[in-house]
Amino acid sequence: MMSSILLWFGLTTTSVYADTWQCPGHEPSVSFQRVESLEPLKMDRYRGYKPAWMALEGNYRSTIYNWTDMAVQDAYLADRNNYLDPIMYHERLRRLLDTHGDSLEVWQIASTHFGYPVYAILLGDSAQTNKPSIAHTFTIHGNELIGVNYGLDAIEYLLETPDVRQDLLGDFNLWFVPMVNPDGVWLSMRRAHASTYGKKNGRNTDGTCEPYAYEGIDISGNFPTRFPTEEPVELESETIALMELLDRSNTISLLSVHTGGNGWYTPDLTRDETGVLTELIDGFATSMTTELGDAEIKRLRPNSDLGEVRWFFENYHFPSFVYEYPSDIAPMDHLEREAARNHTLALIQSYWKTLQAKAFVRGVVVDQQGNEISDATLHLPQTLRKEFTWMVSETGEFALMLPNQDIVDLKVRAEGFVDAQKKVDVREGSATVRIVLQSKESKK
Ligand SMILES: [Zn+2]
Image (spheres, rainbow, N blue to C red):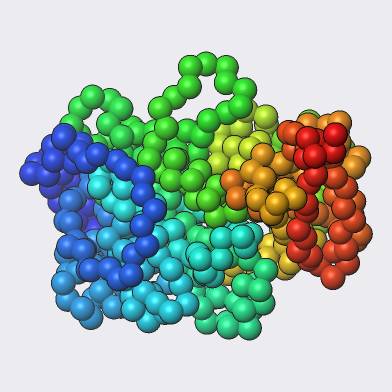
């Protein structure tokens, strides 16, 4: 054992790949391209130094060296407790597309500094643009290796459980980004793995051509804030891609899973004077008590660097949550991994059930000629003078989530139109409405 570690250390001093990763590097980009099928990727054999995952785990290391042996590849991928680097993850998605291509959509939403694709997986139908989406993100910090497994577990559970899937798809499109930060995963597995190493992405921030695992940009901390205290930072392609995904998919709830703690974190709600959003968001922890167990339940600070969740809430006023589990950012022991995966899947299932018990109003706002009004805002009557409002999309469509299945008075306002109020019955859980606004001109 001792000798193999020493040997390992000895190998790290010479690496022919060292300056091909960051210099010149790849040009990151954002895209929304549906992927019908994937080709197998060539495994890279870049050797990390001692704290890299590759040095810590012999099975992973030998799998890389024998990746072209299909029996080795199959065995490694079949064990759902094994951690996946970007090439292995790509292979898992390739196989999922082959076997379940009619039940899921794979979209490439970005390309990273190291040239890895960022994939978003949809269970549902991207053509149903007015359907609300629920979004799940994982491994935004690349060293939180088990997050990839969590994301794939949730997808596979739905693929293998058609009744649950169909039930959920009746209400939502379900988006998953199991590996938001492939560069960070690669750094963590090949360069150095620690609580800070591999956390950020692959941007060259130290000016050297060595891709050190401490460098890069923290994607979670890269989201813009509405209340900037300093110069705005340049947004990374991973960040922009997530923002666009949440925006264009009509997302009404975001769950971002992290590791390195045991907590359920909700957005800062100090500006919610009406209590509507507080009731809605706190209601999740109340109905998920069993699965949350001894998790710390807390609000995020207004300037939290868990930016995906803060940003989404600030901009859309829909629920968003961080679930952090377990305390070990990437458990080594396979039984611990298995327990953490089972626990997290149960929590996500409970989150879905909680979502389905809420009330939803879907609809469109139009003028008297039937043209969509793209700048309308929606309010519950008691929120009229408050700052939390919901906006319709460019096509005048909206989807709202409400705390209770009840009859609600929805107030609608738009520049140049007379305010309107509509009673909406969501006692059955959901309703679809068409709201016609009368122009101020026509009233004169
Ligand atoms: Zn994290």
